Image 1 (cartoon, rainbow, N blue to C red):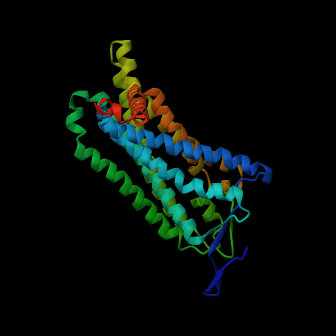
Image 2 (cartoon, one colour):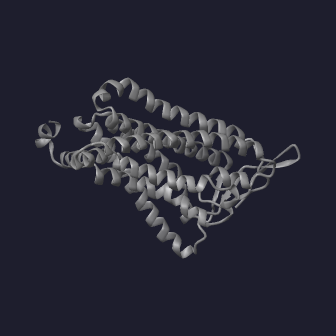
Image 3 (cartoon, one colour):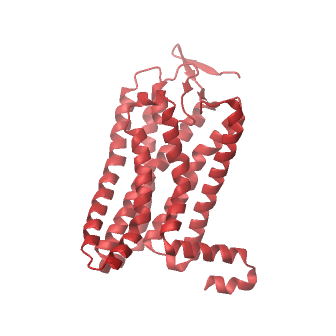
Length: 325
């Protein structure tokens, strides 16, 4: 492999990085490729079906499912930023990624992670309004507000990633650094920088604090109020019905926040250990795969809409009128 470097101010500026990936024997690469490929395709299929079901079923044209469709759309791109390059590396001896390619992958990954943090908080707020203020739910959660909240999630994600990239992309990475990860993430990149990265670390910490802590506070406050309201419901059937409307979202929030906080709340030097890659697999591969399953298993409306959508798409035009009804 030919390594290309440029001379700038008597320093070599890297145009390629080497992703070390998973420390496994070559014999296992084909097995890992097959497993991750199947997981990736299944994740895309699951989320696509949820989006299709929500779009086609009029009964799901509600704020809760509007945000769920955004979550599914987000996670389709979220896994696509990581998985294709990872799959190629399993079959190739060349683990290199260009500087521009690395920064592009990092930008979109940070965008989608930050957007998901905020979107999950918005979904928690939606459940709070639905359970704690049911009579005013339609008045509060209007189409305009839902659109503004969803757009705000994406805008915050894009802006946060852009600010982080301004500080990370201008760092010098001498020679051809070996990144001990299977994709370009912030901490592994900061570890291989050959200059002081304290300013970039400070900006990353501050923005991560804002993007993680604020939505987390919204989620905790929302569910604390929801739990208090549910406990005041006199009948056990009423309590079960109220809790079932937010059980799926609470499970998804717990999975995503716990796995990402475990990684990003730890010092960047922890990326020197290969065990951190296993945790990264959880939130970049496993959680996006499980989220649609969780929503389907715990939500009767989504299950019914999916069944109806699949049956309608599978049937001929003879039943088209029945499907659209």
